[in-house]
Amino acid sequence: MLKIHNSLSRKKEEFVPIEPGKVRMYVCGLTVYDYFHIGNARTLTVFDMVYRWLRSEGFDVKYVRNITDVDDKIIDRANKNNEPIESLTARMVAAMHEDTDRLLLLRPSSEPRATGHIDDMLSMIGRLVERGKAYPADNGDVYYAVREFPGYGKLSGKAIDDLRAGERVAVDSHKRDPLDFVLWKAAKPHEPHWHSHYGEGRPGWHIECSAMSHAELGETIDIHGGGWDLQFPHHENEIAQSEGASGRPFVNYWMHAAFLNMDNEKMSKSLGNVFTTREILAKLDAVQGGEVVRFFLLRGHYRSEINYTWDTLQDARNSLLALYTALRDVTPADVAIDWSNPFAARFRDAMNDDFNTPNAFAVLHELRGEVNRTRSHELSGLLRALGGTLGLLSQDPRAFVHGAVAGGDDAARIEAAIQARIDAKKARNFAEADRIRDELKAQGIVLEDGAGGTTWRRA
Ligand code: AMP
Ligand code: ZN
Image 1 (cartoon, rainbow, N blue to C red):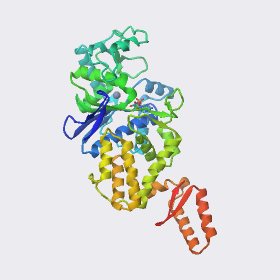
Image 2: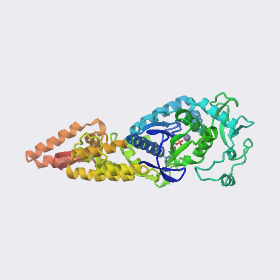
Image 3: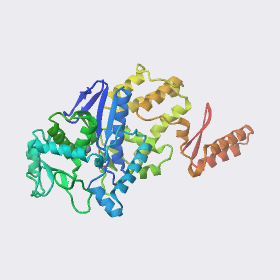
Image 4: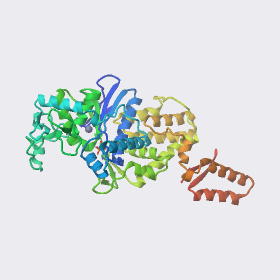
């Protein structure tokens, strides 16, 4: 029985989908003005894990993750680059796919783009105006009237009057209330704009998710996710828009992924401690890197903050390497998961307890110990298959342990050197055997002599 911590009720709840066996899930995706950073990667990877686990549990999941392809940051960046907006966003979407592929993320069922759903947004805005929840202002903007939505603040736990007391911005003369937020912005010169009943303009950010979620998944959905920073105001505003327009509940389970910090500080552009996923992958082994980052991002529970440092990443690498080494040493049998096996049962319990990946990974390590002890091909196959439910341990174990060999070098050369060392030893030429080992060591290749012969790995 799957339990999910619902940010709305602040409790772990049994997961009951609207339609048996089916899940409708929406996750707030990227704003495509730059390469995504390792903090974004965490949120993306957490929901990929959720998606994979739901599928592994037999649900038919429709997973929608939007692409924000029109907003201030995009417009500014395109201007700075002297590049058309469409060319900037097309490049960044292509780069996003390259990087998410390397992190072994499955493509969502659908990746709607804001600019492809302007009509849906306008029709939702129209419904909100009709129902008295929104109003066009004199300057051509359209605002949501927050006071007209009685449930405002239920997700973030903020009371409207407290929000008002904390309001520091000068009262915008076009808003009836400082808390009101924009649904449609009147066109400014040199900005992209669309025609509407309210005049030329472009949508606000919040309306895009309400409208695309409605268009792709219907009025009420099972799961809505994003990073915890989106809880307020973005998700609070989504609720006001969607429920204000439909009169029905919008989301049954809200999920928020905690932040990734950098050297124990919040990662932010102003602190200058932002690393793109691309930059980090470029510093890692080409074969191992993507899965190492994925493993690192999933090692902490999704509701706990995690800290990125080079050392924590290396630690994750060593842990993953230990799992792969067991698979290399004991060839995995091709088995379907037997969920009555105690390791499998405990892994599943951990995952069904609000996606407790740290506990699930601990089970994988215990199972690894058992594989090494028993040399059971079935248990090795189970290890591989359990990892596979989370998008891990599916590469060729030998290739993974070897890693990419730098400078166009290849494994064959190393294998040949190992054979030459074996031959030297047979001829009792130990000086030559040691020389070969030292030469490989100088290249970062470590030889390990074991019962089954000599194996190698990168240092
Ligand atoms: P953005 O492109 O800024 O809209 O962010 C895309 C997603 O990444 C959102 O779900 C954010 O909540 C999430 N996000 C941004 N920064 C971090 C971080 N440091 N750690 C985890 N998630 C983040
Ligand atoms: Zn959103």
